[in-house]
Length: 194
Image (cartoon, helix red, strand yellow):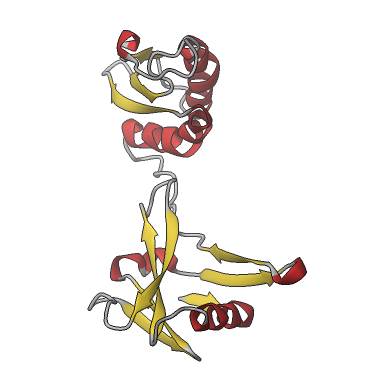
């Protein structure tokens, strides 16, 4: 399931020896699995604090506990450590399956639109503290969106909607008849641009 390179095992042993605790292990879980926001969470795990249903693997000098609901998402995962200059280095966890994949063509238009919003549009809006969510899709294939965060009340929201979001959604879904903003921008408390 998870491959831990020798360099990463050496790093973990060294890191665990530096802690003021005996019988300390590691626990790995996936946060928000199957979504574009999925991430790996690796923490110290004192003896006896792993969940009963965790999958536990013994390595020389430490145990790695994997949360039961994360096991399937971590298929083909690789944990590696690359040494850098002056003793520094970089721990990497490559887990190719944690974000899931775009819904199949036979999935609902709403599910496919939501995936593109979460995986392509919201990461761009996040640089301005903003986000957008799908409110619904009409019978005429008109997409209704609601802005939040820095986009709520932003003076540039029309440009974002037309030149960014609409362009992206129409590239993926030519069947969309239109895109409307359902946000009451007058109530925005912290817009990125006024």
